Amino acid sequence: MSQTINLSPFKQLPEVKAALAPYSLHFSECILTLLFLEGGLRSDGGLNDKASDRGGLTKFGISQRAYPNLDIANLTLAQAVRIYHRDYWRAMWCEQCPPGVAY
Image 1 (cartoon, rainbow, N blue to C red):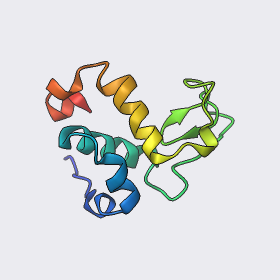
Image 2: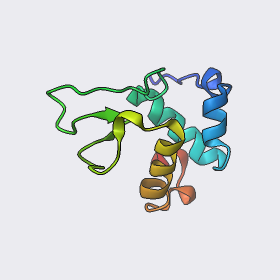
Image 3: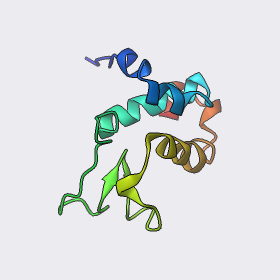
Image 4: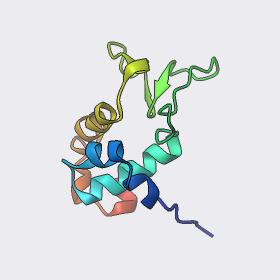
């Protein structure tokens, strides 16, 4: 049985609203789910640097290994959303995909 995650409270947060404002509803729904699962909607953005994580320092699900020239520790939600949109969403043409596939 699958459960639906209620992301409505997060959508009301000013920082989240501002970060998602330039993007489509389709992208916003998908990225909110991803951020929730990655811990990116926590107050610290899901910041972690676990020795067992080969990605190294990670915030909003974005790792130092994937972005070695990015200041992960100071990454903002808006910057993370831009990266997801530019490097994943647009690159994979997700806007044309059904929600489950786009996610």
